[in-house]
Amino acid sequence: MDEENPPPAPTKPSQIPSWVTLGFVLGALFVVALPRRTAPDPAPPPVAAEPAAKPPGPGEAPRITTIEAVFSAWDRYAVWSSGSTEVALWSAETKKFSECYEVMRVGEAYYFRSIPGLTRPVLTHGVVPESPLQFTETEQQRLEWLREIDKENLRAISDAARDSFPAPAAKPGDGK
Image (cartoon, rainbow, N blue to C red; front, top):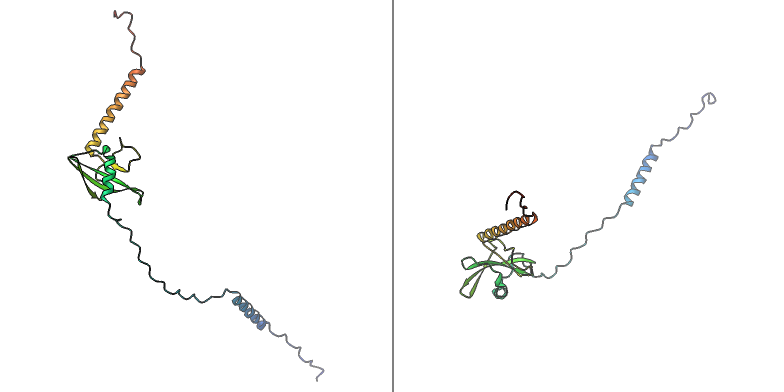
């Protein structure tokens, strides 16, 4: 009977465990290849506290002696209205005209009062560009100056037009 029924052929083992093993090995290699996390550095020891920096805000109070000296050298450019004017002093710290003053004139004496900003228009004519002061004029003074400029421009244009055209020649039958 043994000869009639041959023994069954050995069955091929399943390949599932080998794929699982391969996946496990690849996953382990991937984890090993990841960069390592290091523990955070301990906080540095506290350093002695430095004095707090001054918050940005109004600078130190302007020195009246500075504006007095500068104004006395440049007062010829001031435009007065009812005995007062406004000026702005150049500040080397801010690199702009930031220190503003109202100047009162009583006789030959000047009195200075610090103000937060100029309230009059800045004078744009008749002042040298190197001036350490910005001078102001009233709105009325500005309008008068602009009217004068308009009159001068109109006069210059009309003179140029008159000079560019020759005078009309006398006609032969005019008798003149």
